[in-house]
Amino acid sequence: MVQSSIAGSNSGSISTGPSGRAMAQAMEPDLLDGLQQHLSMERQANIAYTAMALWCAERELRGFVQHFKQEAADEQQHASLFADYLISRAQSVTLEALPAPRQQWSNVEEILAAVFQMEAEVTTSLQQLYALAERAADVRTTVFLDPIIQGQIAAEHHVAHLLGRVRLGRGDATALLVIDGELSAGNSQPASLAG
Image (cartoon, rainbow, N blue to C red; front, side, top):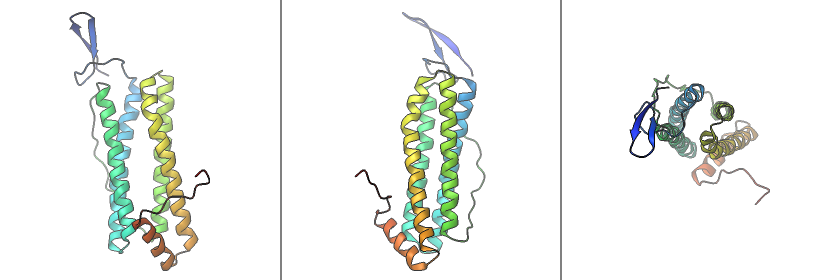
């Protein structure tokens, strides 16, 4: 963590981060590393969803293509949120090289199982970041993470629902096309007893 201070006209000195921006609170190195790694994880999820959309497009599953394209866009948005947050905390953003995503699956169920695992790993990463922020008494970061964790739990719930629906169809092409049609129509949310 690079930190310096600049003379202020009335306030003595103002700390700055590696990017030269004014910094109200320094960030613990472990937390900073974790945020950078999570940003890479979100970028990796973006390209993984893009690969899944391509696989589905090759098999004429328009609803799944639409769904995975939206998921890819959401993951890019999440990566951008982390980048914006790091910048707001006067940190420099590091973009790491990403490995090529997996591009071959035997069926949609296998894809959704991979998605569920990926989303569970993202949730675990967020929980670890939250714990790091709490240990560092970095309330700014816990406040930043709160809505992201809530959205991540909802994402896990949604993919578990889709995986359950596909498994219920037991590989039947008609059932898969019904689910694909629901995704095309934007009607793929899990049932809710709360309203």
